[in-house]
Length: 358
Image (cartoon, rainbow, N blue to C red; front, side, top):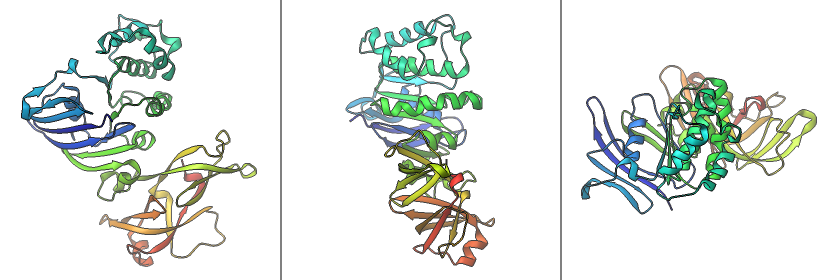
């Protein structure tokens, strides 16, 4: 398996990075944190663009850096695809020529036939003869991703690829990014400071703070880790992995089953029974009750157990709930937590509006 093992200790003028991470062999590993926390530096160390004085970097059995053996392969010797914030396409080359440039960089000496599935995956067939100046921001980034994949990399590095795009262009490119882990059997390391991109794309989440590891693990668990900055922010959310179990067409609702029960959500008419769903639920949209509410407009009322709580000292409490194998966050007032007498281990009912599930 092409697991990515990294260990970097690097000191710059005003910043220190100290990380020891094992990232999965497939799927998207999101590296999340505020600006200046070390996300891009970490990516550059993997790519060989930055040399950590004390470092180790290996993909599977292939070692790219081992400072204990004075081993360091330069960037062009590493089988890495790199996508920057800006597309960085060669302006004097057409889209097709940009892709063939990437192809020539591959150490595997592939022929042009390997480009066909990449072009189809990213939906750029109609762009091949255009010059970069004639592309939208979203189109440029799709071409940049295709060029990075043309290298036939063992790991794809993406440094905030949507940061330079407006909202419309982000929404345009997100579906293509979501397809990548299903089509590619290589690890993708995706740097972002956007909670939305994390919840929509990531399989594995790493949270950095001032060059140090704050939290790491499967997305669903790490998002709801009360020690993670993401879990206590105003945008805190949970991810539920479910599948379509039925439709109530006359109510324009879809039923989604998961280990903690069944959820009603806005109609997903195009999704057949059995289709997997990734559901995002904001903590602010979850309320709690000690008894099952009666005669309420809220459709989703589920048995849950309190797994943890944290008070922010400003009147707000974040509650981590366990529903079957899934975790769910509820953001309530400190007063409510006190008046309900909430404690870890207590059984409660979680209430979620159907219209609040994304």
